[in-house]
Amino acid sequence: MVGKNPEFLEDVLSHFVKVKLKRDEYLFSEGEVCRSIYFVQSGLLQVLQVDKKGVEKTTDLILKDNWFTDLGSFKNKIPSQLCAKAKKATIVYKINRDSFQILMENVPKFAQAYIKIIEGKYKESMERIAAFNTLNSHDKIEWLFKFKPDFLLYVSDNLIASYLGISKETYCRQKQNARIVANCQ
Image 1 (cartoon, rainbow, N blue to C red):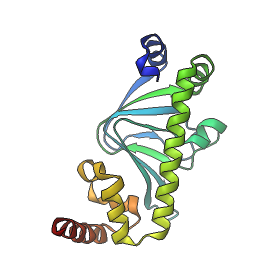
Image 2 (image 1 turned 90 degrees about the horizontal axis):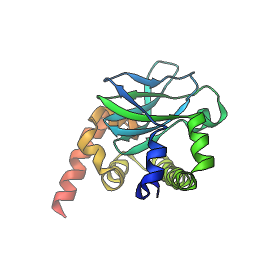
Image 3 (image 1 turned 120 degrees about the vertical axis):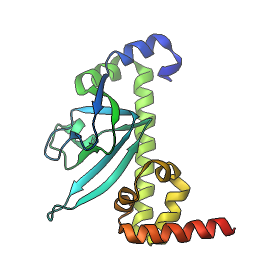
Image 4 (image 1 turned 180 degrees about the horizontal axis):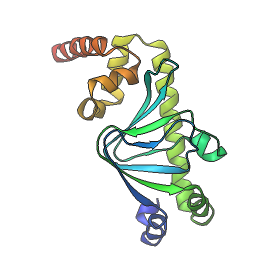
């Protein structure tokens, strides 16, 4: 990909800007147009929506070494229905829409890498949605152990429960049961 070709890498990196976020600082808020694509170098982003009662609902968690954007807002220049905030000190690199378009048009390997990333993220999202729509709380936690084990190391129980769409109490109880079963096998 681009990273294996130093002349492309320097050109690509020159279009990114480093952003440092403090804990609970927003990258963007609901109603704002998402104007960048982000690469999370370190830290943790919570992607969320706030319901009519003011309750935060986690739609995604982005750990280090992952890409993120609100694609609909970014591509169509429309207000985002999401918020993204740092849950701990986080460093992201962002590329704005104009720079992104320049790279897509002028660096074919960048465009190929982007398509591969988008396809992977789409597949991951569809699998998660399908799983979360059909699984009970115990099976959601088993899914987490299998497909997102890093979350168990870096993400608080509260955030994981929100991500899974279950209460923290249910998550903690089911997590203990899942670990006991895993240790017995």
